[in-house]
Length: 247
Image (cartoon, rainbow, N blue to C red; front, side, top):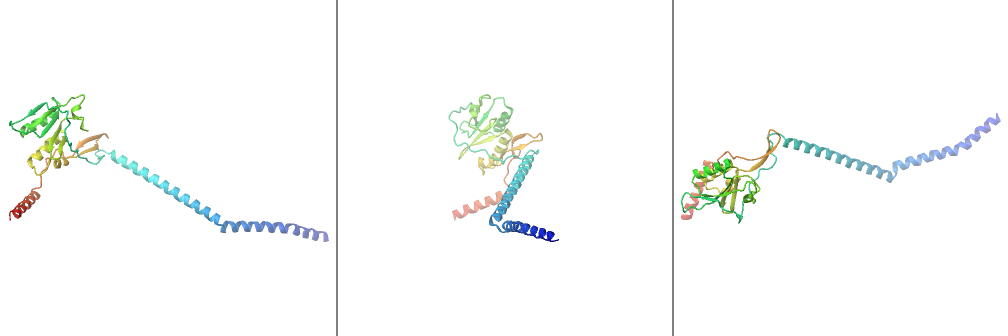
């Protein structure tokens, strides 16, 4: 009996300090993990990195989706691919241009129109027929169908091309239907400049039913007429100004 009591006391003495050290180590570790500034900074940094990573991932997904649907919409039949644009004014004529033929209805007429054409082009014949019908004097420049050096100044490489002289230079008109409509609008009401008329016929790129991109000119089948009520108001205003100047 005395031997058992001695053994029990010996175990208590041997295990007590060791268990105490383990408990103290665990307490210090727990205290460090919950209170240490380094631990808080590490958690905060990890949280920030995750937040940035999530934002980047969302941005990539949204950008990819927008690009996909935008591209799909542009490929739909009838979709307009670009913003309609006008043909810029040609400030001066190239010096190497040679007039092939002059068309005059009276000997003293001065031509303010230059037609670039192929001799056998049916669309060029269409424009010539209209010019002859309205009896407008014009010059003709034959274009070499292979080299096309006569229209090297133009980004548009088809004929007919019509140059109409204006106060700022020469206004190019392209596409036979647009040329006829624009000239008919201009000759009907010359209160508008040829530049104003040309702006009514912007070019655009669109997608056809086969999914192919094509270039066309808006409003080319229409003659532009000024609204009669607005025209009357403007004429009345101009008459009033004239009367005020006379008084």
